[in-house]
Amino acid sequence: MLTRVAAAAAGVLLLAACTVTGGETAPAGDPAPAGAIRPAEATRALDRLDVVPRSAAGPAYDRDAFGTAWADTDGNGCNQRDDVLLRDALPGTVTVATQGACDHDVLAGSWPDPYTGRTLTFDDLKAPAQAQAIQIDHVVPLAEAWRSGAASWSERRREAYANDLAVLLAVDGPTNAAKSDDDPAAWRPRRSFQCEYAARWVAVKSTWSLTADRSEVAGLEEMLGAC
Image (cartoon, rainbow, N blue to C red; front, side, top):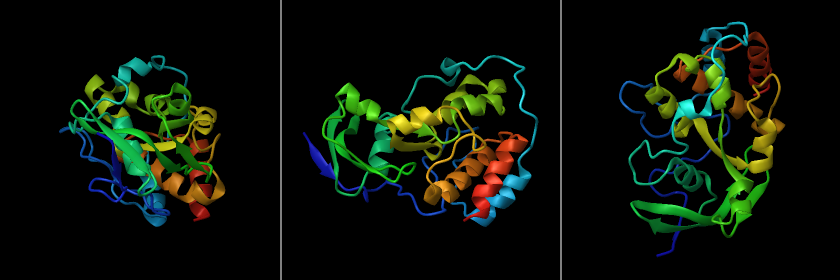
């Protein structure tokens, strides 16, 4: 049965300017998701990150090491992609259906793309072209997390990171592809979102005890300095 749902429903988290809002509770033994963090707090957290030179040494990045994509790690019956699509949609625009144990299989709706400022509207997310046009981005990409410490984590911890709602955003597909696994030294979103993007990035790295390199830190300092 199709249902129109408002994004103000329980469990939905909206983006607030220069504020990072956490997601679901991570599995026991892993960091709790990042809570709200404002620019001044992000600047202090950035100062506490371990800064190490970027190195090509170590094991090659392996996406499979982060487990099944969009696993239902919070146990609500829906995969993490549907959870993020529901959370980030414009209020009142989403069409969902029940699919198995999931009560919000997202079929259609409109989303504010934080990276470009555009509104993304889709009427059939089961169509591959539409599904690819809105993607779920890891703010700190998996490959960047791998280089920053995740290569030495357990498989369970890597899967928890890959599916942590506080790490994920619904964004424009082509823009996400252009971002790839770049850090803030190489890629930034539109200027009006850079403050929140930098705060989110720092919150994720701080929460998950990931390292940073000097050019990355310089990029983050520049964005936070303009908040």
